[in-house]
Length: 198
Ligand code: SF4
Image (cartoon, rainbow, N blue to C red):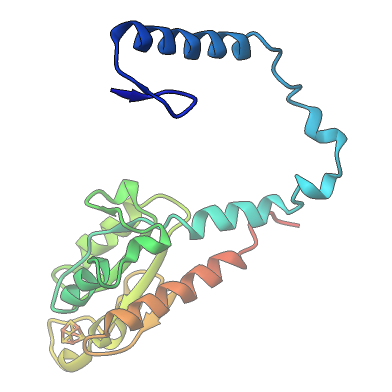
């Protein structure tokens, strides 16, 4: 049973075929009409369809809206990062839901945890393998300065002794809201970046 174009119910197979035929014929009639000129909209008022901006602004918008983070979770701050990526805080709102295992597919390193000297060469290698342009967020007291392990002979006094850091997010550990704020700060920094040299 089907409802016909006039609201009546169609019960028989003949009526159903006829109704289907009408729909096909109507579709055929419309498909044979010429398509509108694709450039027609240019004849109208430009302000309706054109947005003027710079190449630099578009590139910065694309870069800041699709930051892909590489896995770098050496210690306990990583659990706050995992919470940030989960549904409650929803990091994918910022185009960041893809956490990459390969540095070659990433442009952001979020250093979630203590960095020991033993691990430092590996972190440096991961950073060097990341695609340009790339950014680093130092997450947590350990990442910023060594934190509570600062006096230890085996802990680096911050990631910025190994790789350049763009944004520092303090806390032990920082809450997901703090990390999201740091990500917003990085996005603002990227938005203001000068790509085209004058
Ligand atoms: S800052 Fe605190 S929570 Fe983060 S890695 Fe260091 S000790 Fe762990």
